[in-house]
Length: 341
Length: 234
Image (cartoon, rainbow over all chains, first blue to last red):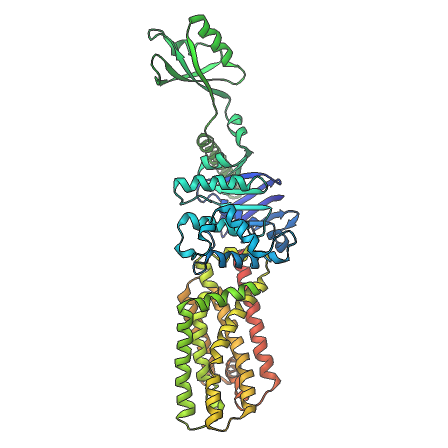
């Protein structure tokens, strides 16, 4: 559906997006994740045709965004970080303008204007503010109107830049649920620097840092692929006098044991890390049975997205530093060579 | 293109600033009419449809230039326009038509003065036709220049001041040409947007000024498209 290859954007000497490549298939819900200034918005702006790339190629539904911009843009509904609203219009007037702007009356599959707009308003739940001036709406409603604008014309692709930024917790949950619903029959790309948000909505995550794509994986695969250990949280009912932590640490494959606390009377909680090649649950069960300890809970703990993110960003920075230092060494060697000559 | 034109018109006539602008036009044009027709005790239309009336138009175009692209950029609504499946030519064309119709609405107020002259004096219908055509053409050129300057900046005050200053300069540039060497003065004087209008004042419709104004309009609309396009590449 969307193919991005070798995408680069330079602003003078600063490289905002550096040789990014990925493909997004029909029906995917993809999260672009990265800290502020990572290049997420720039990437989205290039995909939507708002700005041009310095290098690389983007195709949307088979159409090149630079060579066939109209065909490519016709497939995209875009909600920028700040919704592009005309505050002097009512919701009805604004959506009617967007309908005309997108040339929806010429599309065969789109209903007549009033019906289509009403349908979109019902989906994003703004029917109650249909005749109100946009400038008088709350931030949450403005965001919904922005989303309605993106949905006008029933585009196959929705691109949402930080769709929940600045909203209160209740609105965040509502917008997230709405995006999930919309994603059932559309391709959705959303950007966020809130890791839990991407985790909650997206099936796939592309992590961007300093213009580089540092990871592209399915959400549930992410933590599995990170690090050599598996982690479990366990709750044991064992006598106080026993050295539980010591016993757990001596089990085959266990590399680390951490006592977390006691959250239930007569029990103790631990986090244990073990080699991925060993199924520590079986070993643990045998040992506990032998000692008449009761396992009340055993929970696999993946790495949190926060951990993954920090790890990836660090890796990326280290790799960059290494590349930079190699470059410096090469330059120094070249200088020495020149001086000798 | 029509959607953008309609949006411009609705937005202008919905806001108090729109009616305030028309009121300013009516007030200033009434002063021009009083000074150059009533006080001169003449029915000569060239006295009214001339440079001073176009300076009134400059005021209106300067106010509009704050909205053309500068306001869109400031409010980030340009993201909606530039990511919609329309060409840049449609976008600029729609903005131009919207502003042009607003200017024509203001200009239509002059019908009152034409009726007054016709009722109280001897109206030269030939001059009326030529002045009407000339006004339509010079306004188009002025609007396109305003549109171009608005595309250059997102600062609304800079857009308005820049538009007013440049349009005013283009009206009086031949005064500066007097102080320049002869080879340069001719070239500079030809930039005067008003000097091409003089034939229309006298009831003459010649091809050269018609082509001149159409060319200026087309060139500045084209440059506006290029400015927007270039910004997307930066």
